Amino acid sequence: MRQVAYGLALFILTASVAQADDNAVPPATLKLLKTFDSEFVLIEPGQGKFPATFELGSKQGPEHERPAVEISLSKPFAIGKYEVPQNLYEAVMGNNPSRWKGVRNSVEMMTFPEALEFCERTTRLMRQANLLGENEEIRLPSEVEWEYCCRAGTTTAYSFGDAAQGPDDAGKKATLLDPYAWHTGNAAGNDPPVGALKPNPWGLYDMHGYLWEFCRDDFIESYESIATTEAKPRSRKNGDTCAIRGGSWKDEFVYLRSAARRGFSHAGKDDAVGFRCMKATVD
Image (cartoon, rainbow, N blue to C red):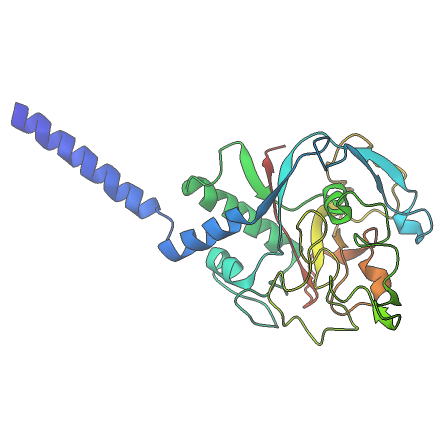
């Protein structure tokens, strides 16, 4: 009987190990997920350098950036310091749709639903690899979360000041945007790797320029009806246009302001549109 019991126990153990192996994340993908996990920045509204309130939108900007609204945040979350790179996207999704190929370049040329699918797949893989709790998820930021992080405690047009152009240290005309952002004045395409320029005050790269970034909100033309005490995304019935933020290498400096926003078709693809992920508790 002991031999039978031992044999049964060994069979169960072997089967369990085999099943665990079958469910294991491939080593190369696991390495990329660990790197991705290490590149999140913890944001704690109301603590230290992170204000509990900020002003969303602009007072003088176009109508779809108005009215400026004071928003209060309280829940902590983490946001990627970089846009999602192509090597991670390909490992998770099995393809790289980008026009401008580069291992650590930001991925582009995906639709909004494909960006959402990436977040869902990455959530499953990271939970499987014990990099994420069952009550946590990888997702796109809401517009409120995105602008809060882009501004990084500032109230100016950009996270580095109000002006995109001005004199340099020698008094000569300089493009003040260049050290922080890829835009139509200093980029010929989506060629550089993520994080090649300076970050904003919270250590987040490419919030201005490089690629427009998907937010999980539907694009709604004003902030008249926005909730002022939460960061949840806004939606409209049968919405087919999402909000994108940040401007891109194809855009002039005015479109790279912290408040700048536009709508983008759910079915659209563009080599100037990508996304950045958040890690947060499940809503």
